Image 1 (cartoon, rainbow, N blue to C red):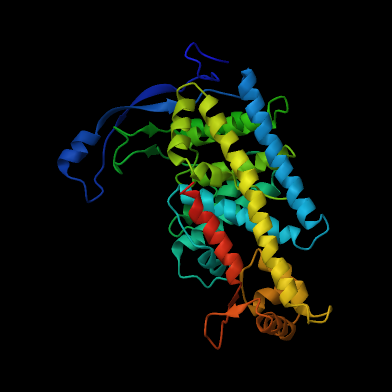
Image 2: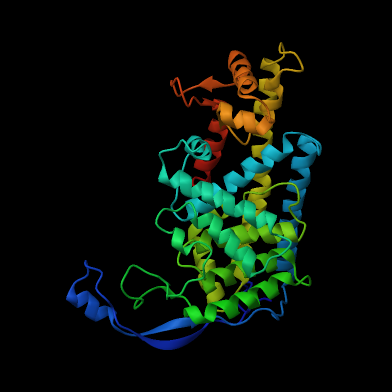
Length: 409
């Protein structure tokens, strides 16, 4: 509905609060004065239930959200038609789009990694801790899509377990609801003065049960339901760490469950990454009782994902077309042809991975890599005699350019 100022709003019940007292404990770095200031009363959030939420959209908000969902569905169809529904490239293309989405979701949390390091991490040959963390985010996204038909507490815990398994020092928290208070603020020893103090841990299970009931509803506009579910999840903040990335994986689980994206993954987080400040402000507005900003952020991100996703699919397919021309002298039965589609998802590759992907011998894998190198499709950049890796520079360049442009758009 609209308000007198002409700005759209979508009222939801604002957060409640409850009063508690905090006793700050020394972390070995804080002064006595800081500990004293950190001790005292504070107010933590109480999340209102949304399972029975009534949603009444302004006409323009309804049209905007419907157009955004239509754009995502159109992108899904485009990827399938551009590549062919039976194409061996469609699966790898879906995989690289999922990795692009995972990279963007991680970058919102200031976890940045280049395409080459991410690909090396998938081969367990990266020296980048961030790359390993982003690979774990990929696994969380994969779990979200795999479990989309049963979005319950176990599915959420599985997504989080996959995510945190790749984050050193946090494995003990993987797939486990938090048992302590968490907050968003600068102090590590006290919630006092924090910008957001999440609900007490004993309130989390019931809040998640309510959220999963809300996600099962089929009487709501999909984008509105997705945006509200995401905002509610981030407000519950059910984990010690990884809430943002798990919550954005949940977005894709819902889009798959609602049959919007059935063939591939759209880079929705890439759209959010363009406007991280607005995204976080929208979450704050939701907690204050207005869901319109978060719906608008997701609508804009969805349109961005659909438009740039098509460009990304086209650019990557153009690279494969160029490779096919370079390989024209190879006989049709050559193993290199079977490797080619996989280069989209694996622009850095080794013989072991080729052997696994094709279900073939190491000798055949080496021969395929040699054929691709001779054709100028791949180059061997490690310079090693053992643990050699080959890469497709064009695909890596496209992925890095796409990521770099997100913060400049």
